[in-house]
Length: 101
Image (cartoon, rainbow, N blue to C red; front, side, top):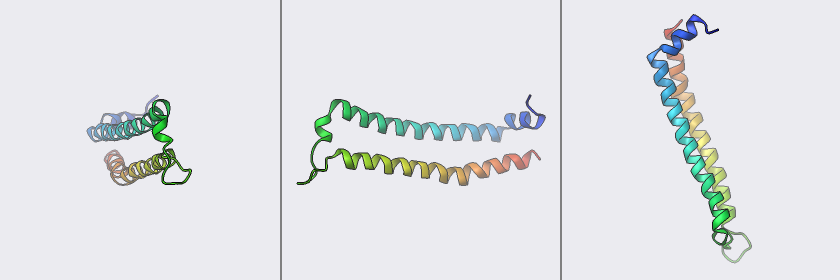
């Protein structure tokens, strides 16, 4: 059973805006990651020759820096989310809770 306070907060316009903003941002980051990962899988499935190209005269192929780039990009997107969550989203949460004390 939902408490009275939880019901009040769930109907607060600030809370609804917060949920909408956070969800939109999360889904945007999810979409970017899905495009990145499915794009890589697409290359693996349909363009192996591209990924198998050697870099320089060594044995390292293009797939290594692309895979490493994906990992780095994932960490950067996670950092972006954490930064926004710790600043904007945490501040909005505190404001909403302060309004309903």
